[in-house]
Image (cartoon, rainbow, N blue to C red; front, side):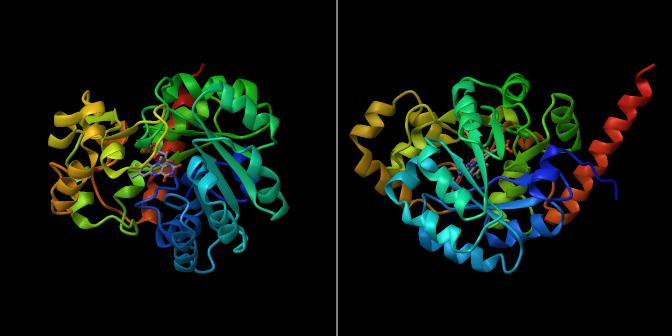
Length: 321
Ligand SMILES: Cc1cc2nc3c(=O)[nH]c(=O)nc-3n(C[C@H](O)[C@H](O)[C@H](O)COP(=O)(O)O)c2cc1C
């Protein structure tokens, strides 16, 4: 199997420049361990900074060297969740969607790498200033929550230009080896993938959700706040979530104030639907969902992506005269 060595693989001591994005509902310890054992780095999703989730999923990861990701504004309300993670000496802690500054020293002192996922150049500059080990440039193509302005293609090289020697990882819309090769061409050092990993054997998602993802395309996704509003998740308005559009989305998107006004009833109705009623229930998915067509094991997927990226890069080299 080919390997692609980058500033990211050297910084994190991994074999392949692939990170499992820390996804609240999908990236548990089992999937994170599978990604790490296959040569990437698995990041466990901590939900809304839930210490019990962190401890449970770190246990599920066994002895694998994994990291943990936090939604920073949620961590602000429950900082004890970071302690639960650091006690296990994770390889890295990822912070996204808020101010990482208050947590940097604690993470560094615990011997973990600091990964900042950013949505704007201003945030990227802040990550450089605080000495992040890795910066993830997340475009609005991403599944789940992201910013609203930057697409991955334009954002990644702009972050590379200000990151100096800090490895920059791309997130948003990357689901195969072509995407990895493209990111390396943009000056990035690796990829963080969420949507692609939701449909793997080790993902926490059930078969119905995985099937839904496989049967869907990027045209069906949209950024919206309606699923957060109905569940009472206090996401700052600048971070909508990209999900599959469904009946619930059609009913409420554009009518967010009305939904907020009748939230209690709306939530009751939402929770009364069956978990596999995807006309109501949310499935977070990014534009790269076009490329998700099967449910492989994480190791097979990583092997496939690296082999394809290597082949794309070598083909490109042959074309240069
Ligand atoms: C199902 C799902 C859940 C996610 N949950 C989180 C989360 O809890 N914390 C976080 O920082 N990012 C979360 N994300 C965003 C990822 O960190 C990552 O930026 C994104 O998945 C990359 O884009 P992609 O989905 O196109 O690969 C989630 C993404 C998905 C698809």
